[in-house]
Amino acid sequence: MKKQFFRIGTLAALSALLPNFLQAQESNETEKQNSFDVSAQIRPRFEYRNGAYLPLQEGEAPAILTNNRTRLNFEYKNADNLKVYLSVQNVNIWGQAPQIQTIDKTGGLSVFEAYAAFPLSPEFTAKVGRQVIALDDDRIFGSLDWHPAGRSHDAVNIDWKANDQWTVRSFWAYNQGYANTNAVNTPKGQYFDPATGQDYQHMEAFHAHYKMSGANRLSFLLANLGYRDDKNAPSAKTYNTQTFGAHYTGAADQWKFGGSLYFQTGKNLAGATKSAYMFALNAGYKFSDIFTLTAGLDYLSGNASDDTSGKDKRFIPFSGTNHKFYGFMDYYYVGFNPSVGLMNPYLTAAIRTGEKSNLTATYHYFAPGAKYQTSKKHGSFGSEIDLMYNLKVQPYVGLQMGYSTYFANDGIKAIKGANNARGYQDWFWCSLNINPKIFSAKF
Image (tube, rainbow, N blue to C red):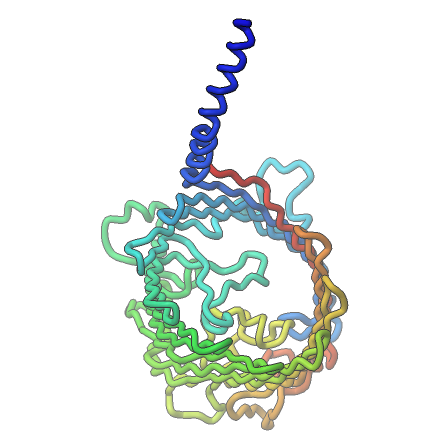
């Protein structure tokens, strides 16, 4: 009888304590303010370069290679109070490292991003450290994710969310590249070589984004970049180039459209007065759930062959993801800024080939943005066709394949300095993008 009373008493006590216990458990769950996540990326890409970047001359052999990006990402968050992010990467070509690798010949690990983000007030947030700066459609500031190494900046980013419609972002950077190996302890002076680090010495940029009605968006950009070259310019002056303009995107029914307009003023690295501009227009119509057609025009100003003004009229999209806009074969604004600028009308067809796959085909026509004349006037740089296929193999694995052809003419041969180039150039690539989430915890 005593045991029975004891059992009944114990059950009654547990029944009384259980709600409090569950409430405590729920309270503990809500008190978990910290999270830690680890993810990775392995992205090999096979390429058959039979005229990519530069037209191949008669008798030159194509390049065949597999490049690879390996990234390991660490993210710590403390509610809305702090975020710390670190992304380390290795970029290499298959075969660079021996089977028995005692010394890393690929360059080892590098830091792609390393920053801390935290609020300054309810409306202001800050991000400090190495970070990607990608604005709007990546036209002027882009992540350059196509490149195995990507693009990041050493900067301070301060954002102001004024209200639900307006967001203002600012970016600040001041770079140095001292010649000696013990640069951290350099007591005086400055030295900056754009060929070995960031290509600008200092940057001040402001980006305002306005959410209009529906799908309409409008943004404004003002950026100042200071250029300096202590290695090749004895005067060691810093020259400032300003880029400013606007970007718009909108949609109505089955239509999507957009436009950009930017100007560049100030002085270039050589000290010449800058007076350049660019504009881009595009419109797309969705004919059905599986077919969309988009037409567009990009124009970037340049210096005419007979221009004697002394001004630099060549527009340079300095940190843009140019692979996205001016042809996949990267003849323009990827290591090569055409002096005469560029005019690029194009037409893109997008086809949904399945629930997890799609195909795009783009035709580009290229012409100089200003008068281009050597022994004869060149009215065209030829044309390009780009095909790209995307397939989501599984949640963490994606497949991309592409084939591009460039129909070279005398114009592109002259501007690229490849007078004996073949008339037909092509490029094939195939890439796997593997992005597993390795670990996630809250505490």
